[in-house]
Amino acid sequence: MSVNKVILVGNVGRDPEMKYFDNDVAKANFSLATSERGYTTSGGTQVPERTEWHNIVCWRGLAQIAEKFVKKGTLVYVEGKIRSRSYDDQNGMKRYITEVVADSLELLGRKGGNEEGFGNREHENGNNYTPSTGAAPRDEQDEISEVDDLPF
Image (cartoon, rainbow, N blue to C red; front, side):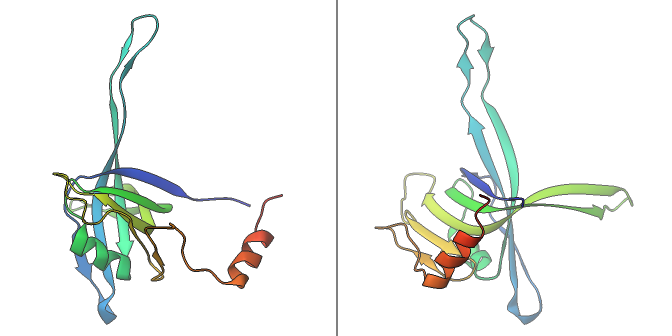
């Protein structure tokens, strides 16, 4: 058994770039920055802050939510899967890219302190998390299948 799960909390680096395909299938791409604080070791060595940039991809309804509410500077929580792919650039060179394909997205706040989106979590399948409980509606079959998938 293997697991491909990513959880990120960070600030959006650019407004989502939207594409629409046949049958109104939407795709949103944006970058997300996560940072580790800098620190000084007991020996006096200073370790600087480290920022990682992640390419986030949202599809369908989640992409439309990103288009409406995600802007540069927004603090977001993203859950998804890592995907790698390759493409040929304008010069015919093969390029490789690693992306996080989002399964869920939660708006934690906006740059400038506007907390309009706080606590709203959306899933691609349309289930909404409620701000008060943080739990999505579930049925008994979901619980049974999760128990069967346990690695022990």
